[in-house]
Length: 552
Ligand code: NAD
Image (cartoon, rainbow, N blue to C red):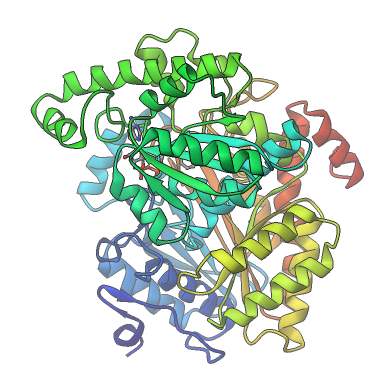
């Protein structure tokens, strides 16, 4: 009956309200979040159990999904369910403060860690790609990417422009699935945004969802709007249809240097993603089909040209950074020897925050009631009255971001703050200010939970980019601390072979048990970030480590 009501293929929906279906909130919570990941409002392709990020799945196949649901409905609070790449494989006797679910997704012994080997296993039904929050049941839709992008732009404003991006022009390429968050994030950070995409339908989608304000096919019109808005200090966003390389070339010819310059075209895939200069969308599709090798060569050359213009703008003062799409590497292959002269966004803007244990803290209301999230927004503002960036984000999120699936919220909090917030939320459940429990989790892209040398751990001070002891220590300490479910994955974000990362979610159901677990886990998790960065030699992390007495 439960499956018929909440998981009838492919119509998944988490139960709402305060009535339990499982034996306790400890098992009801993962059950609701698993189904929420697959809700059509949240997931890209529920039919294939794909949540986001290419092929990131919540369960290995339909049979495994039903079995997980079945296990969670019966699991006791002194037991833990084991999930191996999206399939339940056993139940262990544990204890009430231990995690209820232990998840391992897509892990391979390093010498076998290639897409080819993985795909072979997947085809034989033996594995699943878990991405980061897909297979660990804490994906919350596009709010996550908007917030992460906002953090990057806001940090850029603080670092270079004395506060916000007010009266600054931000230019970028690519307004697709994730890049489409840029116009909204840049305007929340106070800037004027000009985004260029070769595909008008991608820009139109951002206009329809109110992520982008205006759209044009005309360079001159876009330029006029952008300069006018920048000079007046209007935080508006403009989508221009065109090739990003061509637009940068024209801006240079016109002597217009953006204040901030980055890129989110799908450069990570030179054949199925980036569209080479000089081709229409249709011509690109034909060439891709007819001669993928020729396509790739044109693509690499175009990226070299594109990065060449970025380097020129950087020389003339634009704050220029790579946004995690591997553009620099392919530009280098395409013939631009200086492609790595600008840095990636993590060393530039995010790492200083990682050193303070800051990262993408998120929570979801199991009641399904948006008022529960609005109440937590308000409570957080009162808890951190001085944090202007947080206030600006919470207000913008409330006004401009629609909930997808169970109402949820994300904001970046650091060492100390996460624990305070979690304990406050637990109080709010206990005294009835919230209608049902919350779950608190985070992305795997966090301060102390990931090893990913082309992204989160690029250019570590001591060269320890590829050391994955850290995410394993994160997993083990969150397990020992009593997270409600924990996960260890391979290949998220940048693909098989390139990353290893850990996830955790912890329940706030108002109980004393939850308070104990929250207190430990929300200390441990950001502390791992501080310790990892202090060990690598970052001064800021050492200071924070001493302040919170974390270092040995
Ligand atoms: P996507 O495929 O949905 O969108 C890419 C867009 O780029 C498309 O709309 C396409 O039309 C456009 N494009 C391609 N070639 C172009 C050209 N020459 N000129 C102008 N537009 C062009 O991809 P996405 O999900 O938006 O992600 C974009 C990239 O950013 C990916 O490489 C992704 O991995 C990366 N990314 C990284 C992070 C991170 O590191 N945190 C976050 C978000 C995105």
